[in-house]
Amino acid sequence: MPTAIVLLKVNHAKVTGTAERLLEMPDVSEVYSVSGRYDLMVIIKCDSLDKIECVITDQLLKTEGIVDSETMFAFRSYDKREGGKAVEVD
Image 1 (cartoon, rainbow, N blue to C red):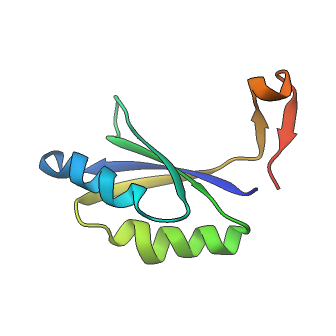
Image 2 (image 1 turned 180 degrees about the horizontal axis):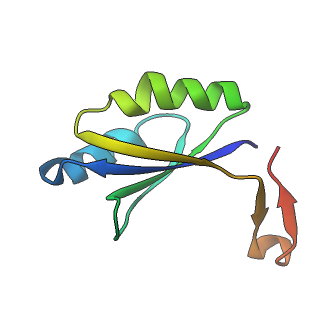
């Protein structure tokens, strides 16, 4: 399943509320509070890259409190549940 990892800089007074709103979006599977240059890491899984693009541009980035973002797409997953073997991300 196509997967995007979106790193977000968020207004510090709105991190928790922003994370909660993002997690309400159907295609957002996980939201993490992280250390470093970014405040939140969002995992999005959809049936197609086109759908991911719509989720990011039409929903996620319009969420109040987001200041900046960086998006990465997963090519392959290495998962303990798969015995550490690479699993293609369709």
